[in-house]
Length: 253
Ligand code: G
Ligand code: G
Ligand code: MN
Ligand code: NA
Image 1: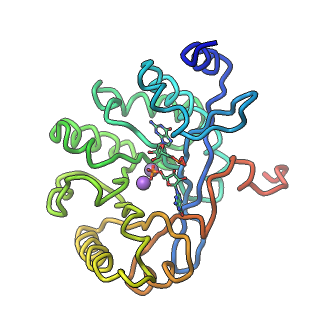
Image 2: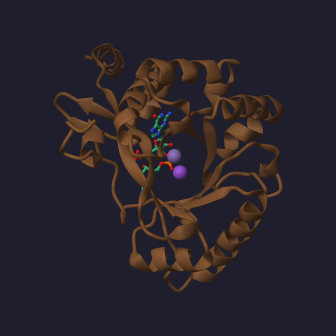
C-alpha cells in the first residue's frame, strides 16, 4: 500500500487525533490552556508525530483534510478540557487564510462540537502574517469579534519585527524555544535581551507572552524573574491524549 493510499485510508477511518500539551501560568504553574498537536494513530506503527507524515501529506495535498479532522476532534475534546475554564489552541497554516471563510468554518466546528468559541484559540506563524497582511488582519479581526483569539507561534524565528505585530489583533506571543534554551546556561545574555524586549513591547500592547520549550527549573525561574506570564514545555507536561488531563471521575455534573 503506497503512503498516499495509506493516508487516505487513515482519513476515512479517522486515525488523526490531537494530543494536548498544557500551557501554564508561570507564577503558580496552573494550567490555563492546552495546545492541540496532531498525531497519526497508526494501526501497526504506533502513534506518529507530524515530522513523520506531514511533509508527505503536504505533497499529496492531504494536509487540509488532516487538519480539519484534527480540529474537529480537538473541539470535541476541548469541551471537557475547558470545563473548568481555559482554552485549547489549534495550529492554523497560511493556506486556511486563502479562502475568506476561516471564521465561519471554525465557528461551525465549535457549534457542532458544542464548544464555546471563546474556549478556542488559533496559533499562526509569522509567515502567515507576512503573506497578505491586510487580508490576514481582517480575518483575525473577524475571528476576534467571534471571540476566537490568536497567538503568534514560534515568535522570533521569522521576519516579523516587533513593530510589525501591533498591526494584527493578537492575544498572545509565543516566544520560540530557541530563545528559551540558553536561559540558565552560560550564553544566556543575548536571549535575555530578546525576551526582555518582547516582554516590554507586549506589555505596552497588552499582549500575553508565553515562553515555549521550558525544560528546566533554571529556565522557569529565569522567565518568572523577567516577568514572563506563561510557559509551555516538558517541565510542565508533554503532549498527551485528552483523557490523560481529565479527572478520572467523569460523573460530575
Ligand atoms: O509535537 P510536535 O512534534 O507535535 O509538532 C510539530 C509541529 O507540527 C509543530 O511545530 C506544529 O506547528 C505542527 N503541527 C502540530 N499540529 C498540527 C496540525 O494540527 N496541523 C498542522 N498543519 N500542523 C501541526
Ligand atoms: O506549534 P509548535 O511549532 O510550537 O509546536 C510545538 C512543538 O514543540 C511540538 O513539536 C512539541 O512537541 C514541542 N515541544 C513542546 N515542549 C517542548 C520542550 O520542552 N522541549 C522540546 N524540545 N520540544 C518541545
Ligand atoms: Mn504551535
Ligand atoms: Na511554537
